[in-house]
Image (tube, rainbow, N blue to C red):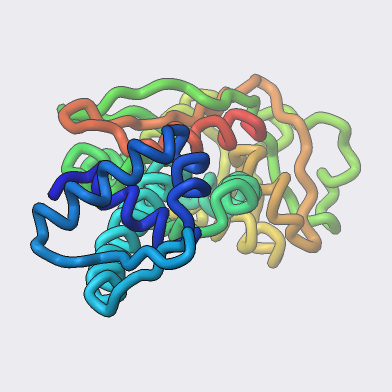
Length: 289
């Protein structure tokens, strides 16, 4: 028994005619008849009775057809699985991100991605840049979105967004009426910073030398800093991605001088084959960044 015999037998059973089966399989009726004779010989089963120019399947043919259908359904399932893999890739998409990107930009990007790939589960893990870098290198996430580059073997970094920082103040603050805030305007102002040792904080602090700010609070994540500023606890300098998408009430974002550039990086794995869905997500990311 071979595939051509089984395919011809199934088509004859479905159509009830060797002539129609030949048309569907783009062959001749004599060829279908020959395949049926070979199949009967190979299986030792009488499959059809011929009466008045028609073929009637025997009970043995009906029983064999049921087994053939099970096999074809399995093949169809494999075809559908392959099509699904081509369409949506494998498994879920795991993203590592710093909070400023995860809370600001990322929801918009994920929405676009989900519109195109609605069946793909997406998992977002949020931490600081060093942790996201480790996650990417070890395969805990498929890729990472970070605020600065950490020397982590096994990852490759590329900039996907660059923008000048904004000074954030409460909307009732005297500085809220300014078109532009300079570092001299923040002399003695209560300032909310990222933690000491954070690379982004290092860049911000470098713009205030000599430093005359009043450091009163530290917070790990920029979104938390923004909510503290909105509550009247102080002022700060943040990545515009945070305030642009959060729309925090009572918060005013104003251009700052000297310019402080905030860069956002895409971390990709180097030591494993990249998830096919990751490439699709990168395209969505670049539409917004």
